[in-house]
Length: 148
Picture 1 (cartoon, rainbow, N blue to C red):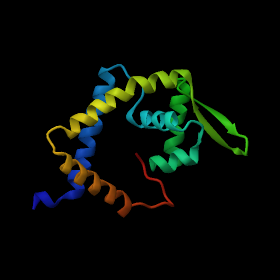
Picture 2 (tube, one colour):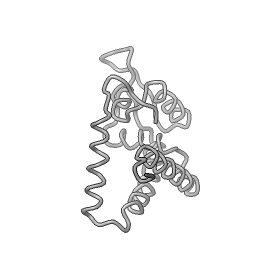
Picture 3 (spheres, rainbow, N blue to C red):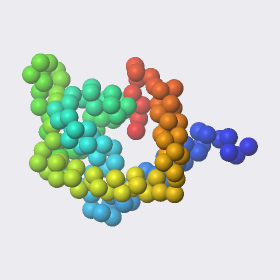
């Protein structure tokens, strides 16, 4: 039965959302991708996180995160600084340009989030969030990051 193809439905929903969000960000003149915006949001909330902390929060592999940080740094949205407690580790900080870009993208993401919720009751949204959160827990593998 087509309705039981949950993997397909989740994958397609994710793909359509990513395509829509990328299009809206481009149209609005945002210079970062959705993944990069996620990093900016995390740093805005808690600046100076380590690569490991960001990798775990975003559930992405270290090489993927390194590429995202490299591009953000090249665009002058973040800067790396050696961790004073561990010289092998770096902390990532927002630059003034990163703060401006974060402020630019945040209302756009909020608007898209509101579009997603439109037409559903508060109860339906809560059930949907519960299902998604249970999937996160069900398939969480703390030893290995996944690609975003």
